[in-house]
Image (cartoon, rainbow, N blue to C red; front, side, top):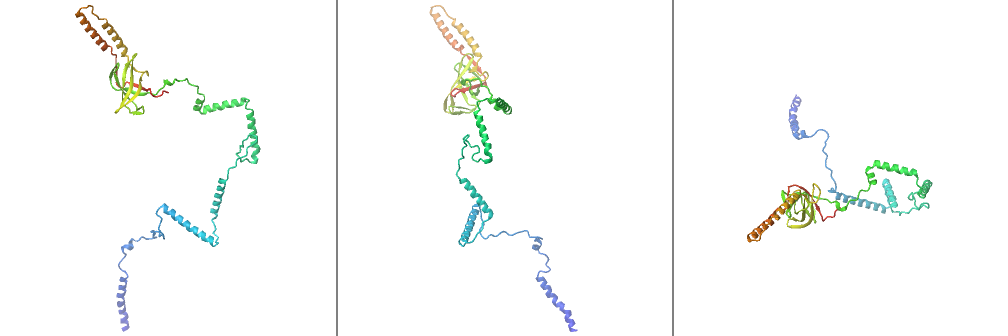
Length: 347
């Protein structure tokens, strides 16, 4: 009876100790957050490699490391040779070394001049004649020798063949044929060609004999080693001759420099020297008639009053003659002109 009671109370004594042990070992607390965050399956994170020595930082360090390794291998080979140990070389490396040695031998071999042939004095095979080719080469050399000897005779078939080949070349290459068959052009006088410089009249002007006419460049220009930019003004001295207004440009100013030049003005419309001046002839005729009319005036008599009046008329006649005698030509702005540099050698 007492044993039964002890067995009935024994579980109540053991259960508290089991519960305490289970709780102490982490039981009943559920799954922690760290365990829940752990990935399932294979671990894909690998640790970094751990080198015994310092890792090379740049290319030069790698070269130095290779040299050091080569020194170590050389030391091993020296030790092996000292103890009569047979170190076998790689077969592929040995073959490469043999080929390199053969190439170096061929390169270093002195050149042997080929023997000349007795027939023509020239060895057509370049010194590498084969026995099988000897007869063919000799026949070819004999044929060439016969052709040279009979070169004085004209073969009509060869002439016809050459003419046909020339025609084929002319059809395939028209430019080359034009250069070959181009006829000689007429001789050109060297002084008849020159490269002109474009210019225009700078503004509306009225040119007279001895007046200054302003021009403007339409392109950059080099005179006496000085560069004049586009739009630079030029000034020429006017002189009338046979309905042409000739301009002489002897000096050009650039900043504080005065550069001596020698430029001739051409009219771009008719390519003649000077500017076309149709008004000059009409004005000349009117001036001549007026001068003749004034010259015809005169007073006869020898009294003092008449002489004074005659002196006044002569003075007025001289003044009027000078005033009327001035030839004028209106120049419009933008009138196209061409300039020739006379200091340059004409082609």
